[in-house]
Length: 547
Image (cartoon, rainbow, N blue to C red; front, side):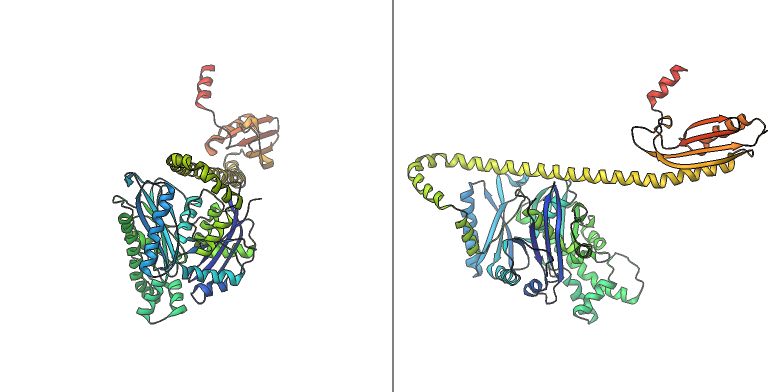
């Protein structure tokens, strides 16, 4: 059985935990928990979260002002040189700010505009931020796997569980006090950023303009705000709250626009243009927010819902209820948990310095270190000669890994869609069995009510789900059938003519009907179906030639 992965996203509004594993190409949830954060701090968020499942090492989302994500263009250099360059940049930031930071970096997919350069995404988090999370982990008896920027989790949630097309998409997770933004072109990550803002903008707008604060202001936003442009408000409360929130919606539009401009500047993609915007997070459920953002950004805006492609069958009823209510707040945690199940996933893993040193030491075997020292003296000259070649091979390997990863993701998504198509096909067949049988029976009765001769009556009428080769329903694919038996009054005039006239009128009342009829003195039968395979054009030609 695949190993479970656990991800935690503690925000100022809610704390969310997701656990799951990869099963046959699909991500299966094995645990879900959410808690409201009454104090709005990391400490209160960790303290409020109670897990109904046993967690493993946790991937923890990072966001907020103590996380810094920046971009650097560098020439294509060997890995060891790139690590040294990033070490110098991190040291410079730490010296400038006067605070200790932990960091990690990764190369972005190279865009056509790069002109032979590599683009490095570098994430740095203050140790004070990591210490707050470590205190929460320790209080709950949890183990840390790594810290990852929430925006990277957001990207992986979209890549694995979203509809990825060859367009430019901005995906924003709108939390209570922060907004995490990623921009993608097709499956490739172009930009990731975290900013201040979020639902708190709307609560503050209500507090300033209507003089209410705290939970009362948040309740007014939830119950009365309608941000649809030109919306007709049913009550004065709806109008006051909606007007107060409209300025905050404008701030959110400006925030997203600034992300696009910042991307163009930092990554130097001057021709970047959005095709669509997706939103998630607690604030994304506000009435009319998508419409307001679409009007401000001049592109389609929709809510991002990755959960239809996630298997939640293993969750308990209470966990399913929590997922239904808070699924939008859990998108980042889902992306982080998905990353842990895919060794080729794009990621950043930030560790506190002491934990990083410990893992580095434990990852090296003592005998390998000793063998390396002995071998260095013997192989020094050889290593010097082959270093350049090895670096070139590593660069090629990175490029091939990226291509393979992209193909695997496409293959996985195709398999998921095929499985979903099979389920929908079965559902459609079930609906045809239920609705088609009743509809066909009703139309047949309507026909008999108007076209059955007065001397005729029905002795038995049955709607059945089955196959009948004579009605062009075969190949073990059942379809709705109507089986009709009847009798006629003895001494009726021209009974055969009346019967044939009734049968000949069938197609006008039941277009496409195929029937199997019989008549025997005072008895008759009609088996019919409008769901049989019609005669193909080639069969029509052959029939005409036979005539």
